[in-house]
Length: 41
Image (cartoon, rainbow, N blue to C red):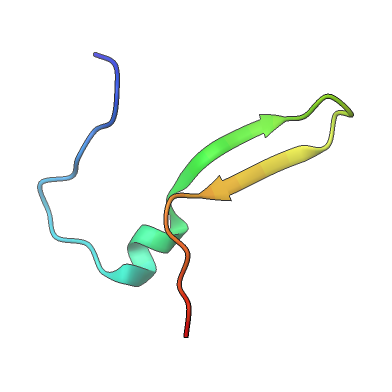
């Protein structure tokens, strides 16, 4: 299976903001994490 997996359960905005879209080292070996959702107030 490849691609995005969509949860069958409803998720809160807080839960969605904890999901990680990118989790990898960059060229300078710094660790980069990017979330799938960003909460703005």
